[in-house]
Structure formats: structure tokens, C-alpha cells
Image 1 (cartoon, rainbow, N blue to C red):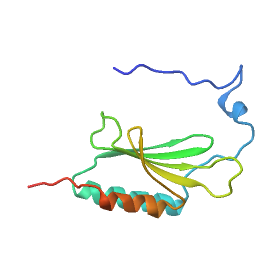
Image 2: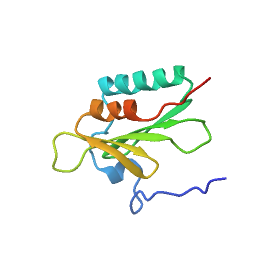
Image 3: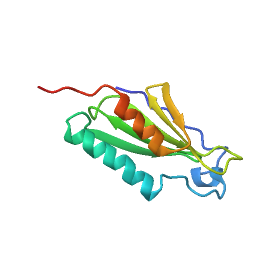
Length: 120
């Protein structure tokens, strides 16, 4: 069983208070459509079975799983760095960063270059 780790929220502050009044950071509707189109095509091919969305103050993450109870095969992160107007995107396989780009489409195109599951 995994160990739970309590993340710090600040000295006696609730999570929303420790953030200040910053706007939540998410994937846009268009970006969600692109991610779900990729995900649904790989589910139909029998390669992927589950996904998860995570949201932090300056990052949104879409994680893809082969099986529900395993670690994520891939994670697509959208990061808003302080001082930058436009977010950047990155594709991870575990801890390894496979691709960084200023466009989600550039990151998604990386999946076309990866080996696919062969079923026979």
C-alpha cells in the first residue's frame, strides 16, 4: 500500500487562503478536447484504460494509465511560469521529460512517434 504524504498548506491557513486570490489554473475546453480525442483513440485500440486530471496553483496535469492501479504511463503537464504570459506544455513518462513545447498539439504529436501496442 502507498504511504500518504500530507502536503503543506501554510502556517494555520486553509488551502484557499494560502493561495491568495489567484485564479485557478486548468486546461481550456479546446485543450481538454484534444487530450480526450487522443485518449479515446488509444482506449479504442486497447492501449490505455484510465486517466486522471490534477490541478495545482501553476500547473494542470493529465495522466494516462494502462491499468487503474498502476503508476501513470504518461503525463501531459500545462505549466504557467511566473512572468510568462503563455503557458508551456510538457510530456513525461514517469520522471523523464520526453518533450517540451509551447503548443499542446506539438506535445500530443509525440505520441505518434512512440511504439504502439500490437495486438494479435
